[in-house]
Length: 317
Image 1 (cartoon, helix red, strand yellow):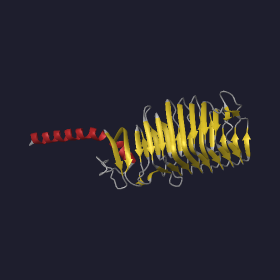
Image 2: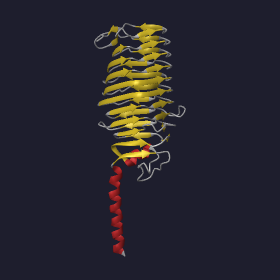
Image 3: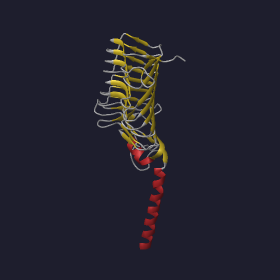
């Protein structure tokens, strides 16, 4: 009997040991409002319930979590390469009634993709919608980020080369910034914003390159309206900034349409109208390392005052 018990025990241990690596190396898992967070969940026929459980227990680094049906999936902290994807099943809610909805503390080579999510601060109970603290790359696609008592998206990486792209996304109702990049370290940032709407925040979009940070910004085809203060603020208080801004509308904001007092901003084919204070505000004298440069094809009309400061001329190519 003793020998038989020992053999059974050894067999059980071996089976458990064999099962664990299989779970840890799953490259794709599904979550559902009807799912259950339990060992072995993740198949379409046996989905997990929450993003955090699937992230922590089911999907390996570099894998993907897919949304099966409309539901609320809770807040999530990400510490590895992963994609969280909803490709049209309905509202995939990532809510925060305290703290942040999505916190990213990834490694220096990690890539994070967020697609098709409704990130909500539950009537301003949550702080930030997406807080990006570390990682090599973040892509936010076709998302709605709203109702936070802080920032919709905050980019705070401190070191290394980091790229962020936000496309086809609405950021609204934040009591601070819709989107802000405010690193204070030595990061090299590549920031791309295309088809972004920032509405009814305190400020729509703000870049503040500090420390020895270098920020390259491309902002295109986007709308900034109804923000309490500034539509778009682009600055490098102590770092360096090069921004290309093309075909944006910054209108009906409570202060400026576009403000930049440091760094280089090239502006083309944009509308800055009906802002309470200035259409464009700049205090830096145009030079190779600073200034707002207009391609002379922008429409700046109907503001409290249209331009404050001196604009340089960007070449039409």
